[in-house]
Image 1 (cartoon, rainbow, N blue to C red):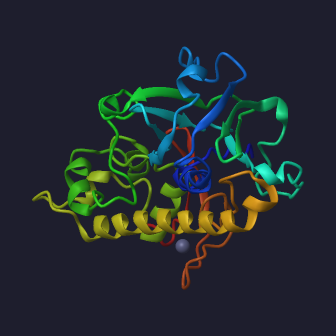
Image 2 (image 1 turned 90 degrees about the vertical axis):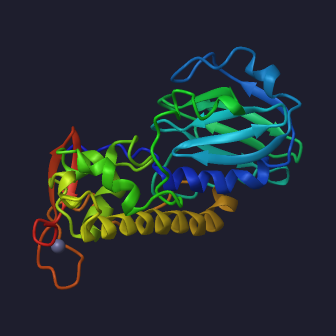
Length: 301
Ligand SMILES: [Zn+2]
């Protein structure tokens, strides 16, 4: 079986944000070294000049986009694409990049270090991306909500706006399978293949079920939709927490941020026994919208 490439999902991006924040927030970009004209897209014109001398006032995130607010009102938007990663070389640890084995080995070949930001605290932040599907952009803060990247984006999976009541009208008209609707970024932003599989497994819901079946005739969320909403929140929150604890263990050793080993209950477990207590089923893999879906036909109905 051809393995799917594990692209960074929202919990990884949030872990990256948490890892970078202490080195970026409140710091000035002394030097911006942009080493090629483009990644997935061209770098913005004069990006080096725009960045140098600017203070980073905050490092935020929306879906899988990292947002570095600059003190001139611009936002440096950074997306990891498929293979992008950051690592930090601290001033006093230049020679301490150890060869620790990571679950997902990436981000160390210096020929793929495309961006280097030297911060006023002495840290150098390197962006590495062998496949170059990531991108950097510069957008004025007030233009951000209406920018094509963000304009149609759904709610955050761990934000307060996510609720069964919010999802009910979005599900009510959709005959498409649950899996497809949950991957639709206009419904929930930043939910990817892995965590959709996991949340559906935890909810005991068949990924092939039409989304509208989770809404009552009067348009109210069903019990199933309430359970699904909570499981989405819990699944993502737990993964972010796991990322945070890995960050503590590994940042010092390696400096590569945001890739950590998860233990999944359904994802990538084709043919293995279901991990739900009392379920004797076996995880199956099917293809939906061109992506692998892993689920247990016994307890997901
Ligand atoms: Zn099961």
